[in-house]
Image (cartoon, rainbow, N blue to C red):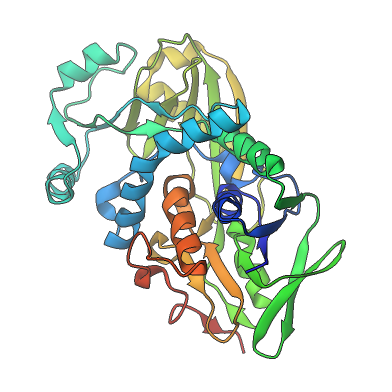
Length: 367
């Protein structure tokens, strides 16, 4: 395997490239804008699905592997680049959760440290929390990663590797096909040939697969978030209620998210979402009524059926691999997804059973 082209340079594309490059593969990445500046930058960075018990075993398997791997990844990138992705273990409280029994049963089955706690304990731990919540469930080992720093660290790591080339502001418009094989990509700067091509273009992956006459069910799902700056000790843990969450960064920034909107590829932040997110923030943490919103943005999640990503080779198109469709859990699932892809591409024993993620049987001919 002398050259691999990776289409898309979000966390999934960059980490796929990084793991392949560590195995002495020559990798060329293409990104239509700037690496890491789409969904990977816009997300919250919780290293757990918001409601892990709602997901299939396929998502759970990737999430658990990634959660265990993240601290090592953060240390590795910091040592290599001097950029700290800030993998920050804070724990997570769910408040007034309707599915508490289901969540506790899932945790017992999966061996995860999730438990009911008295609300008085939460109020002592989180003095800024609003009064009036009746029940709480905690998972003490949940971390969050500062995703803008994670993508910055990944980009810096790739730029240090002699066998990696990153082309930013260079869109891929389609694939070079010779017989039944994909042998490269058409780009804004000309054709690039490769032995293997990895499609990791997030919400845009479905559009590129259409150029091959294949319907890949990955669609953009807009999410808006807002950011406050508070004292460093204002919020010591992630809190989640009524589908909205507050995530603390080490320096006192507090993220509030997020909306779920089907608006095509429109990423425009809206006043309606701003008002809704501010209302949720104040409902969780009343002191934020007096705090200034210092950021408001939108990103496009790569929505997929059941949130199960597509990882593996594309039938009838030798040389084409997918690593996309992670929906709300791209940052959570990225380490395991990229390790699985590398295992499959390099012919190694895969870290998890690859069958649930295989594109075979999950794609439809557009013809």
